[in-house]
Image (cartoon, rainbow, N blue to C red; front, side, top):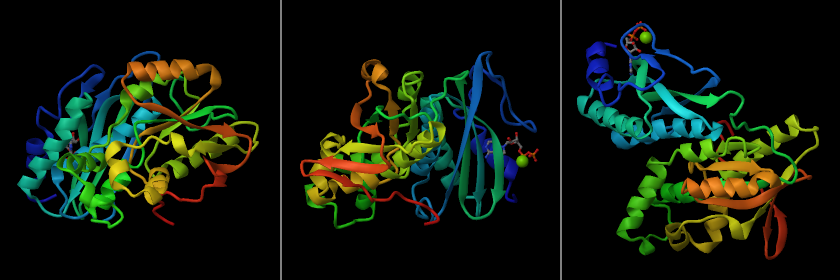
Length: 335
Ligand code: ADP
Ligand code: MG
């Protein structure tokens, strides 16, 4: 990239707040490649996500928040696998050099990198339409990763945290009339902004669930859509028998600001189909449920049983009026 590619890398992506050292990091940025050592008995877990301007974030959005969100959604994938963050790499394409933007962006990255002890160890910097790709690297004890496959009939279905906050936050950010803004107070504004831009990567929860969850993932496209992936993977992995789920409407965890600001008629649909929450959804066999509840309460993470895996295809929602099939879809880029 013109305009001092190496100067940009050094000033913004070479700062100590991002390039700090940690065990297993042998060589950080500056050479032709970085080096990580994998401790004996461990496996390297990798995941990558790209965020493009005008597709994944509006142009002109806050660079500090954007950077935080980019790294957090990647870390969430490690959480879903039960992996501990190790380091990340960054490929960034920029239309022009804007130092103020770069300072905010690298500052946001540094905040999250520090919080999760996950340093930046290399990358690529190019000129082009604004696009950010992050690859995270994590560690998991050999054979202990929580996979999408493994759900079986009789498993309980659990989620961390609350659902729908990020989808309600998008209504808030887009001034959607379905969000009752007259009921918003000043701390709600903060709450919804954070729900969208600062998802919690549930690392501690993912690690605690190793060996207890039969299957799991993080909810990025909406519960119904992502739970569908678990059921499909479980059926392929199992006897080939199709499996489905019954969800209990009364047990879907919703936040207080969500309950107050989203009208009742929209609440369930938003919580079940809205994306971007990055909470974990896991299946837990009956024999592990008490232990799972216990480790999650020790980790201080809200952990709610929302339903059960059943021997029938599809997802059904149980309400006071009985069971009904759920048809709300999650977000699909090519739909
Ligand atoms: P090469 O031409 O050998 O691929 P580069 O010029 O792309 O090298 O990068 C030089 C060094 O700077 C490498 O160590 C690379 O990892 C690092 N680097 C480049 N861009 C970034 C970035 N956005 N963040 C962190 N490190 C970067
Ligand atoms: Mg390069």
